[in-house]
Length: 388
Image 1: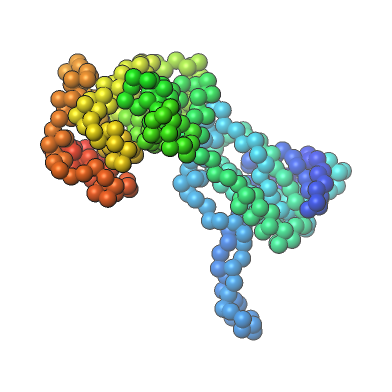
Image 2 (image 1 turned 180 degrees about the vertical axis):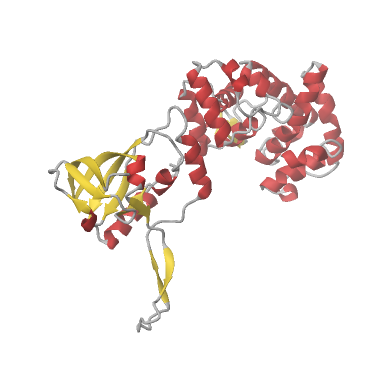
């Protein structure tokens, strides 16, 4: 039976808001003393005589995002999971006993003892079925007024600046583990820096807003470029990502150990997977180089015209999602050369006819990618559209 009290060694902090405490607590203990104060509508009681309205909103937290919770559940199982920032809770004074001196707080083990001000998704990512040792830094406010809770929550969350997705892609360069994201980033960086290559200066590395790089008009963000490339390497779900990271870290980056993945990867759907696990990223880059040189050759004016979409997100997406068909075929034939791709791209020129490759014609949404791909590769794209 669990102890009736959670004992936390703390330091006292004094700031303009008042005094609060910081300490370290296991996720199991923290879950047992707090809950999220989710904002929701509450009807007036039937015996309430007030006539101002029929109910009111209570609570300060946003509803849980189940997709975010699932991501965190996968993340906390990785071998290098880390939550260094504090989870902030507000404890009702009737649940606290400070009989251990100023450095110890004893909080009654009751889910109503505290509400979460910040960190509800992190805490919800820990499941009762987990046998996991994971301590969390926590900031504890005692007897915090509702107005103060709301102001603290809004200040923490409204003032945050969302990280640029291209910056997130770029930061994987510092990873000591050769995860697919790092390999795809390095390929994008190399192709953007190759003066003789089809993507020279065209990729907005770090998502910068400049219209020109190296005197060349940029076409696509680093995030968009890498995302489509990853779709040809592996599924990219949290489950696969976690297992790949764990296997690589435990094997000191030996990619051959990825052959022991518990769930096998469909090599037809992810044709660059074999290149990746064999450490042949040069083969991935060479294949992409040949493919887009072929695109340049078949669509010379469309590729260089920055008013058109072929080298932008929609055109790139359509071309990459067709590449999932071309690469397995080339592997079977033992050739992924420039001429191979020119031969397979030639029908796309005829299929498009006189339709201009403009945003007005095709749009700029996710559906536009599928629409353009089907138009370009009508004879062979149909069987693949469900996978796109």
